[in-house]
Length: 174
Length: 174
Image (cartoon, rainbow over all chains, first blue to last red; front, side, top):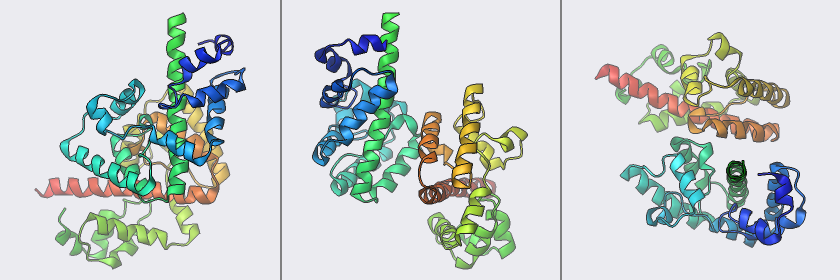
């Protein structure tokens, strides 16, 4: 996708295009719109990251809570966003053994109870063994550290989503 | 491998068996030997971790420096330990494009210059994209944070090495 095209979008078009990059949180794109024009993906993503970083803590936590549990109820019921479905299947989380499903379910409950938001990880960056390892480790961190880590993971996830979005749009236009 | 067998080993046998778990650093097994008997892998690994944690900072840094660069000179020259070869190939680091090789070489140089030890990551926990992402991110952390992170990665690596070692021994004995 051409940045001339992006920079000429109306607010509505911009949010229709980028509102889904941050999970169920179109307000990030809505606020980032004001930072036009964007020279490239880096600047566009940086503008979105700046919106989240400057949001009050409650809104940051609401953003985290807009994410599905890892291999959780939404995955089972088929109600996850397409992006989350593709991400979770990339690490083999759509093909877990019964023991692994039970282990993740238990970790999800304990993590939420301790930190107040779901465990978020850029699954495209980890192997299944790495995801389990990080889940156990991060469960025991302080919630302040976890808020920072979870936001960093969200930024890694959204950077990859933005790249895919721009690449696929380019394909359509070509 | 049976823990009765392990707990009956002489110091020499023990170090011959476990001296390679921490890369080129048999002193970890030598000191952990004193903590016998071990009930299971968790306790054996915990004893080794305790040896490293209580070592002076210079020895911890020497341990980090006993590790090869990621996809670096040792990999190219074929002088890495068998464990490192298997680990680095698991993430596809033995089949990088010319651009990726150049990028890692540059990151290796910058990371060492900034922190004073090589970039260490439990490659079996990450995808190739995740390794590049962590490399860029950790390059910019403080060296104190990186020392802690690198040791945590070494502990994750050695836990997996210990599991493989015990599993393969079991195969030989069975």
